[in-house]
Length: 314
Image (cartoon, rainbow, N blue to C red; front, side, top):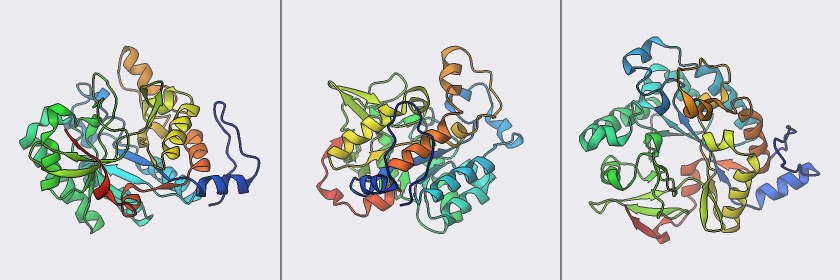
């Protein structure tokens, strides 16, 4: 891997030489980098502000930002998983084709970015089928990975595991092993495991990265935490996971790399959390990729004996 000279945000110490970067990167497990491919007006904070009927009349601003992300990944010789909405694939099929042609994994993020709590089992089954068919028709191969919008697989939506297995998915990455009002399964393992649905179906689960500090799991996997918190905290979490011989599962959104996006009328604390740090994301991601080789979720799973992983019943 070629070392890239990029500014290092926060207080991260820069390695002395390119050889140090290469040796350190090759000696540790890969970083599992992923992007949830949705646009700025499809986020959960826009629910109730932008009606879905308006989506087709709005500029999604995904073409240019996706190309910048693909260029950054290529520069660092990195691969990633792109959890993509069915709506994005129908509206902007050229983006999905470019991601796939660049050697990255296409996975599923649902069809219309609806929380599973709002869809219910029947609605979820239809949403999932629409998205999976759209994505598979574009890439010409099975889509095996899934991530729920707003990480909305939890104990109240455990039925989703059986439906995902029924639909032909082999792995999920929706579980945040933390306690939060909007999402989270605080007693879930913080390392890869086999998740078991109420009907007995099993999937591989790749939970999002946390940093364990004195028994408290701090969420440091990406998204708002990546923008709000110092990069050092994510790097600490990655290092802690690497010491266990495991990779760190991280996530980002293309809209987080578009600081000039139109501002939605989001109010109060939500507005601050949603828009803070948008100008920092590109140099921070470059610094992360300088230090950690990245690979797609499915590619890493192919190297693992997943049948030996612990099972956890949701």
